[in-house]
Amino acid sequence: MEQYNKVVELWQSYKIASAAELDKYLYSFRILFAFHSGKIENKEITYHDTREIFENGKVVNYTGSLQALFEQKNQKLCYEFLKEIIIKKEPISIELIKEIHKMLTVGTYDEHRYIANEERPGEFKKHNYVTGIHEVGSASENVEKDMAELIAEVNEYTGKDVLKAAVYLHAKFQFIHPFADGNGRVGRTLTNYYLMTRNQPPLIIYDKDKHLYYECLQKYDEAEELNPLYEFFKYETEKTWEKALALANGIKQELKGLSDFTV
Image 1 (cartoon, helix red, strand yellow):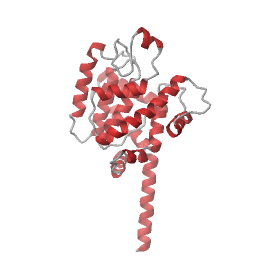
Image 2 (cartoon, one colour):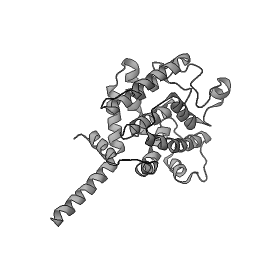
Image 3 (tube, one colour):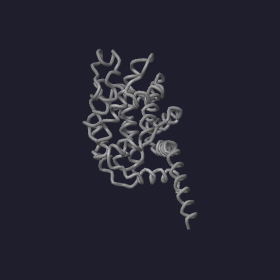
Image 4 (cartoon, one colour):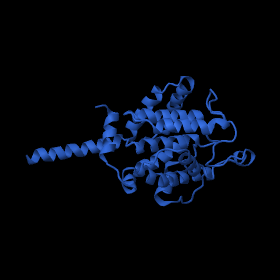
């Protein structure tokens, strides 16, 4: 069995049925995810500060930027909000995506976006912004329609390869670029939400792998190629759960050894 399938099997063996159980199995993950997802676009974010926020709700003697602090506090608040509805397996909706964006970007919009462009957390972009070398992005007047179509596609998916549907969701979301800012953080959070509501393991896109991540997204922008991002997501999932899988296998071997001994 390939490594990715072993990770899926491990995740499903947890049989998570409550927010408390989700906290248990995502205790370290939630901090690492928040750190790496934030650091991809903000170099000032540190693991120490992120951990302090998640574990203690505050950072002592903080001297960094306020935006970095807000972003990581927002990551924690967003996780606390989402864990309850992950258990309920609520389908993705326009309202949910806007709420995720609002929670992740409150206090982080710069003066130009907030005052000059009248952009707001939790609202789709009012102006046209471009991203990447190919300047992708739906026109602001088309965002609502394009997002509704994407949501319908992924919610209606009933196939077995949930990861492929999640990859499509992520690539198309980034291509649409529905918000004035925060699209990366929202897209990575939304992808994991979708995976977990389909009983699949969430993943961390590691900061040191971001160049490969951007290359894979560019492949989709250029030719709608999903396979590079699909293989990248499998790799990052294996990397995310490598230690947990090794620990689980070690425990199984110990139990087998005890069983053999008693026989």
